[in-house]
Image (cartoon, rainbow, N blue to C red):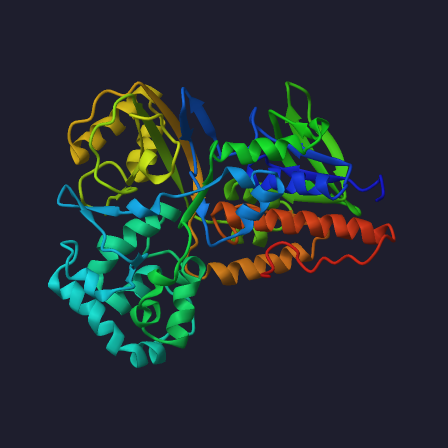
Length: 481
């Protein structure tokens, strides 16, 4: 592989770290990884305190998406994979200030067993009737399936009505994307349901009995926390590649190469030239970098983003909690929280025996306000909100607070069409790559998949340029695979 080929990876979040690790694994030698902070991993941030495993960001991934699991196995972490404790998997919805369990067998807002709805107090008789009637409307729903994208709100309302949207659809999607279901693209965030509608019409009929067919845990994590994944990845990245506390201020096409201008450690602007630049930065930062290159690219990267504030609370006594994984809070319930997780009941080994670990999540306008407050204020507010929903809770022995400003991009209606256009513009700029959660998925497996694919395409392209074989690279930017 030619020594002249140089690659810049901008951003040391999970996408950038996976890309750098994959490049190293493939024998690429001249890579520079720019990171504006003093650590790698981005929102993947595990804190270990006295036997507690505390996640400051995501706590696992959806098991049916295999890309993160495959990476963990390649890193030698196969024996550290842990599944969620699904024998006690219950999710609650806050209703009139109280926790009401979602019926068994729900796949998001779709029941796999309509009979289970009748034993639940979550839905009114009208909502249950709407679920039952949806099966008989299969032909009409299939015939009326729109040719163009629509919002999640419109899709759910067409199938089940306003109550289901408000009680389950909104809270579930807000918990993942932090977005407004009236704006979120159903084709981008629920593609499987869209396909079912096209083929079968009825979601309930198509998913009936589906829960019985599932095997294994719904969620997967690592025994030492997701930080273990980052730690193993970093071990495989040459130390000389990483530049911490370095901000990239501009990228520019200069002849056949890319000029990257950066500032770090009090030094003057530093200009360097690269053959490939992988921009693995949050959408607002990426947008600012590409604007001088293409105003249209910047326009397509103008996604609404939401912020999250997280408070994890550790307790040295095992007080009573409802059985299950946690709860979601619909809009209008009066709680400041968007969601809460009973961490020690979701994954094994998250707290020492006889102890508890809870997480509370804030978003929206309150999240913005709290982000400006100190850690103690945020932790106190989380404890107060949890007590109002769960009853008496003792004082925690520690708290971990994290702020993730503008970290969740909203995939608005028409997202896939905009990303296809963006992909075409990226393809016209040799050596430019866009990675991260603004494009083709926000989950850890999606980010792993895209980062590895980009790194392979870069490495195979360099090998082909050196006459070492065919490129084998059919993927650039955002092209679906």
